[in-house]
Amino acid sequence: MRSLSLVCLFALSASVTAYDKIIAFADSFTDNGNDYKYSKFPPSPPYWKGRFSNGPTWLEEVAKLMPNTTVINRGFGGATTDNKYVHAEFNGFEVPGLLQEIADYPVPGDENSLFVIYIGYNDLNSIINPDQYVVTTALTKEIVSDNVIKGIMNIEQKYHGKQFLVMTCPPFDKWPVVKDADKAKANELITSYNALLKSKLDKLTNVEIKMADTHAWFEQAIANPEQFGLRTDNGPCVPGIGNTDECSDPDTHFFWDSYHPEAKVHKAEGQWATKLIEQLYPSSNSTKA
Image 1 (tube, rainbow, N blue to C red):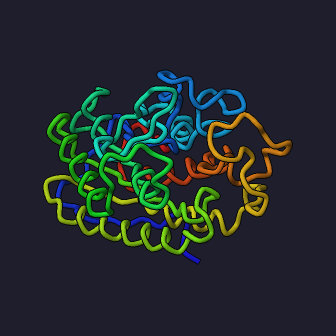
Image 2: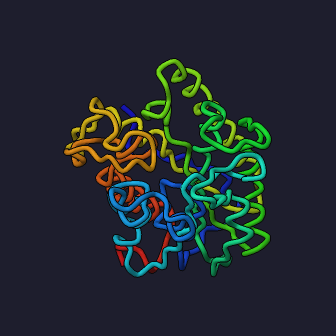
């Protein structure tokens, strides 16, 4: 069994400096109400205060565990890497992609910031389930990985960003949203995409990039849901996405809806991510200070 703290380190061409803030560009796994601010989606309740879950998301747990660190959240539910190719839309709100988040939603970032990139799930899911998105131009794993590279380069240019933590795409082939007939195809796509992304990130030489294996973490979490007091054999508590019909036992479901994990999973992921960040990056603001 692979360790929950597994992390790939590469492209260590720039010296590590202490960060003064964490800034995340991401999708619904990280969204702390950004979509809801513009669209009033997802319906809350049963969703919790505009999160795509029934409680705080993983990055909010990081912020809780690192109270002396400024954490800035630019996660938008449904975000792809570039909405010019594929985008989600909720109640008339066109969700910004990674490149649009960087361009249109300014942050107080600089060379001392730690930039977190946690995106790609919706891009790859649009290849498996194109009917769930607005598709202008069909995506490929090559385009998606190139867009992540563009995002990093844009952050470097706009904010002089030098330190990046890139999260791998989680194994959503095991999510309820993927039909049984498509699970093998989705698994191959996710695995090959993560490898392709790593190979491209490894070629960047003017920034320091570390890659957190979120995929491995979720593989183990799903294989051992009892560690959270949850089950995976009872399906999502809220079928689909944005449904208002909530199950009677939400605290037992690993999946809150067909796309997203329950709050206990977010909390555990946040605890894992916090330990990982503190191990990888020196900071006077860490919980060890």
